[in-house]
Amino acid sequence: MKVRALTEADADAYCALHVEGVTNYPTAFLRSLDEVRNTSEEMTARTLNSGKMIGAFAGDTLVGFAGLAQNGFASAKHRALVGPFYVSVEFQGQGAAQALMDALVIRAQELGVLQLELYVWSGNPRAQRFYMRNGFVQTGVIPRSVIIDGQPCDDFFMVRALDR
Image (cartoon, rainbow, N blue to C red; front, side):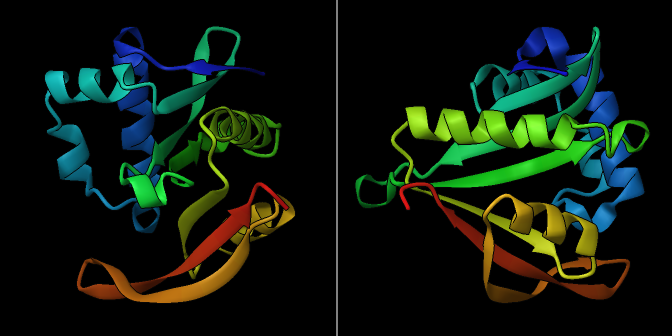
């Protein structure tokens, strides 16, 4: 599994995979399917050229993506938010998620990040187990983090210290 930063050259593959992810797991994303489908080419290019998105590739095929957004405030630059994070159903359980997480940790350390943070749907035990295996600890609950089709969904807030 090869992992590298995504660029606007990856836009078509990224958009298709993002649509797949939101279709299969709507509670795992903040943006709705319509919002993802209606994202402008300029916005997608800006996102992919920002250096915040990495992709996992099986050969030349993008099979997963993950984002890392460092907090921009001086007093909070030691923190970074992980997400979105998705691996195609077809490639789950084949090491892509671990490759993405390992690359995110390396990137975060290069940026001087001491703490990774993420939100995960309370109804997704598989993702929770993956994050716990990677050193994340649940520190809180975000009630009604999203409302999908009129149903409120809680998220768990998880944190991983990189300096301990």
